[in-house]
Image (cartoon, rainbow, N blue to C red):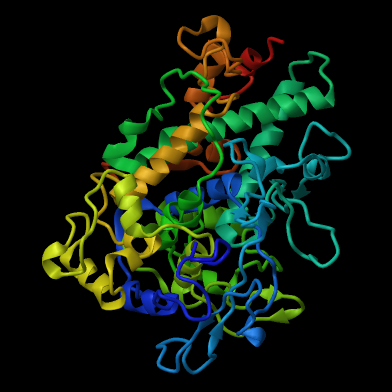
Amino acid sequence: MSVDVSEPRGGRGYTTLPNPRHVSYTVHQSEYKNDCIYALMVMQFGQFMDHDITKTPVVDDSCCWKFNDMGECFSMKIDSSDPTFGNLTDCMDFHRSEVCVDGGINEIRYHYNQITAFVDASNVYGSDWTTAQELRDTADPSLLKFTTLDSGEEFLPKNTLAGVTGQFMAGDARCNEQPGLTAMHAIFLREHNRIARLIKSQNLGLSSDQIYEEARRIVGAELQKIFFGEYLPIVLGSKYSDYKLDTSKDSIYNPFTDPSIATAFATAAYRFGHTLIQNDYELFDSFDHASIGSLAIRDRFFDSSPNPAAQSSMLEIIYSLMRQHQQQSDRHFEAVVNEHVLLHTHVQGNWKSFGGDLVSFNIQRGRDHGLRGYNDWRCYCGLKPLTSMATDARPEELSEENWQKLGKIYKSVDQIDLYSAGISEINVEDGLVGPTFACIIGHQAQRLRFGDRFFFTHLKPEKCKGAFCGFAGQGMNEEEKKVIRGRTLRGIICDNTILEIAPERIFEKHHLSRNPAKKCDYTELDEANIGVFLNF
């Protein structure tokens, strides 16, 4: 924070830091550059998992009309020279996050997470009892509520609350944010119901609650395996092994590990995924046909009427996530991110007539949360501290071009925002982030695994040898772990769609020799092995 413990980093009104919008269009201008290896599925699964572990509550209020308000408003000034917004507005709305205040003499602001931090599929089931019950099917409470498409497949139920007409309902309200995310929610709704029906088919006389809870336990473990075992190796590359995240190995619960979400992770490092976003979804009606059209994401933020992820077009979105390149992970962002985010979003009865800049929002949110600058986080991660903005003082983690870009906007090394410099670093070997973000993401993932008493790889006390074995880790038994370790995102998508073929490695772009398509004619979890989870 600034001098006042409740002030944003750099202060408000007169700030000592550069305007976030200036940083955005100076350092992070749009440039179209596809990733050579990975498909858009990496971006989409990353966003889906973000909504399982982080949600910063923000007041939905317009601040620009009270620009000089020194309460909770922290809007950004737009200069007439701004290349995108200069002729449209002189202000970009920004409201500070909701906070808890410690009540002490200094009234320090604490930012809180509105959902459970654990990788527990809260985005599927909700983070509170009321939401969880609302999502359960009334006719058969072992299932999640669903609507039925013309194809006979299940889809998300409509939200019947006042003011949200036409939107869908899931464990996380952001399920309507854009079509790819809605599609992922639908896949895991189907997976829960598929597993619940498998359990019911065993005729063990289980109650609806027992079936629901067991299916939920399995889906949560599947997400843990995919996130830690498939997704994070791609993100962290050569640094993955530094943090003991390999789900093929057993683990021991550590009750002294804090699994809560670090501000640097939620507000900066994990937002690297915004650089992977494409402007448009290329739509496909099969795995091997050419594109049949495109869907501009800028026109679909929170627009579910008609929702392009519903009906037969949901499969077109899934094909897009598998077949389309993601953008390269670097300091550049597509226009949908830094010019058109939330364009035409419906807010308080009105449609916004122009977009916003997510890069500016990310930088401003870091300042709002009092996030320390890039130089401090370099030191935390064991990198050499920066000493000056001079050309010959460039750190090896930043290219000459990126260092020069940062030098145009930041006047001292201690001004540099973590998000701006972190996303500008040279990626670690075989990874999608630089060493600073790899450090922050790796440490957070480590805490999420070892601080979660119910993580599926944890040894039970009777099987455990070590300092913390007296504590009640509640992992799965050996047979259960074997099944979960065989689960993949590819398998779950194949099990819950009418896809006939899919790439062998779902996160990579299809390639005839490196990543061939194979038939979806098998499952790693079916009638043959569901029984291993039912030895109560």
